[in-house]
Image (tube, rainbow, N blue to C red; front, side, top):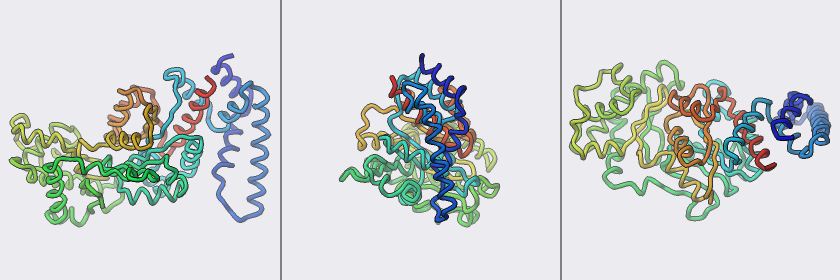
Length: 407
């Protein structure tokens, strides 16, 4: 009997759905001081073990199949089996974006759901390193990740935080390599552009931007964030204006360039930026092909990011999330990665494309991800999950790894 037949028997002959709900309840039951609640948890735990025992006695690898039924739905289990048939590998590292991936604004008070945190912890305890890969500042990420996962896990030596979309990698417990400031390796001319834009981005901004935005406290990137709820109409409006302002400052900061040239170059490179410029004042009558080679060379090293209603950002294309993840893998000693990469934005897409090209992982995205991200995910393994249900991909990973161990 092969694993397809065993999974069919598992989900057809046993009440796996009820077993799954018992496991979920036992795993995420909150710590409370009520004796009645604790007794309820104990009864559920006993029932969970009794149901697992039925499966343990029915299969040669009964412990594995009991764990699969308890941790994954039928669809998740068969998805994992398909992935195992395609790649014949287990996932050996998680690469996880945070905002709008592990958590979504307006759904759970912007917190990572308890089930997602529990599964991350469970996979980590099974020996899987975790790389948190985000555009946020290091201090901000350290705060909520430590609160959610615990100080022991964060300082385990097998967790890394790639922050500011690749400007640095923080891997506690690795001595001199604990914090790697990747932006220090950039050329002085590029760093000077960032210094110039950062020094003027607030002071020279129009009043609506000064009142409606704040400068995120990055170590290197220049990121304007809205003072309104992410995605709301006022946030969309002010970030659109902030993008135009950022492009103009960038043009003035690059030697021999103009604000019009910056607008033209990035409008030509990114349809989303072009659409914003067309709505907010127009694309200048400048042919991007007429720019001097020196100006083009500098612009091609700089990344202008637009995230509707969320951020307008200046970053370095030499320091994207791929650079950060590669640095994290190096510090963690992951020489042959096969990663689950989860994300929603174009910066995450670069990591997804990198692991695909290197045959080094699989990609998953929430249903509300950027269109180009969804196109990539649907063209590979179709791992699209519902908003705030990153746990489904972690459950699938749990099953994939156990099936790989049976081989």
